[in-house]
Each structure stands twice: as C-alpha cells, then as structure tokens.
Amino acid sequence: MTRKEGSGLRTARKVWTMEDFLPLCIEEGECLLWQGGKTARGFPYFYRGSEKVNLRPFIFGVVLGKRIREGFQISVRCGHRECISDKCLVEKSVSKIRKDVHAAMRQDPAQYAKTRNGALAAGLSKLDMTRALEIRASNLSRAELAAAYGVSDRTIYDIKREAIYKTPKVANSIFNLAATMGVA
Image (tube, rainbow, N blue to C red; front, side):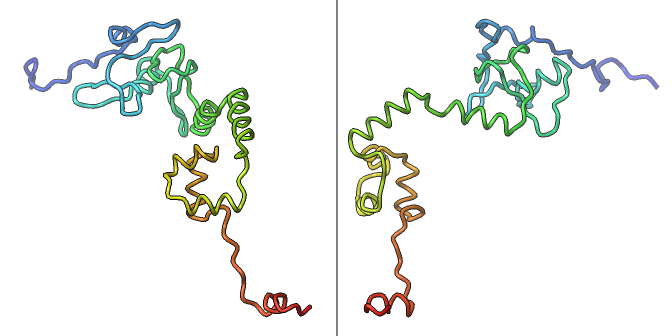
C-alpha cells in the first residue's frame, strides 16, 4: 500500500544553522545580540511551530551538536544576556553561574570605600542596640531607614522582626533573682 504525497508522510526535518538566526541579531564584536523574543528576565527565545524554545540551549545542542551535561546550563563568556553567538556559549554548572552573578552584583572596591566612608563620616557605619531600638520604633519605610543608617533594606527588615539585634530577655530564674537582690 502506498501513500500519496502529503497524506501524512513525515517531511524531512529542518537542519538548523546559525545563519537562520542572523537576520534577528546585531553583531557586536564576536557577539550576536538577539533582537527577537526575550523572556521576562531578558533571555532569548523563539517559536518553533507553536513551541517556545530557549535559544541558547537550542543552539548549543541542535545547531552545534553538543550535549548538555546533567546539572549544567548554557551561559555566555561575554556577559551579554542577549548573546547567542556560538563563540560565546559555554556550558557551566549552576553553582558556577550563581557565583558569577553574585560576583557581578558586588560593588567594586572603590565604590564600597566611598559608601563606607560616607557612612563613617555620618557616624552611621555600625549599628548598635540603641540604633536598633530607634529603627524598631520608627514609622519610616524600610528604604528610608536603610538610606538613613547606611545599611541594606534587608538589615532593616531583620532588625524590625528581631532576627538580629534581639531585645535581651531576662530569664526568671532563682540565680537572676538572687543577683538583683545582691545575694552572691
């Protein structure tokens, strides 16, 4: 039994190459910056039929023919979030990607020194219990308090909920009672 052409026979699969993606890219040195669809976090994707496909792993696996090892993701050497160049794509462990992101978010030493010296000059570089109590009593927003005291918003949050700079609690024990009465 033979089938007529176009009656359900599978057609040959498309062979993808980097040239298929070039019309939607801007060249910047070795980088190809994707100008097509991007996720909410800015990572490149495209639609293959009705399927949304993350572009970097697709290029790494399908176009370059490399296999992504378990526990690894595709990142870029250049640091451009939109880059899809085969020269920039690298396979990295998730922990290595996290370390790189954390390192990129840290201030450079000059910026850190400027921030620290500003806080020192204002007398706000270190918190103590009195300042923590002031923070807890304040009706200002966390952002305003963080700016005023030269600390992060998270530090203010932790102080307000007493995760740090906890109010000392007096234990009701016979020893504390004896100490208050002057008995040794």
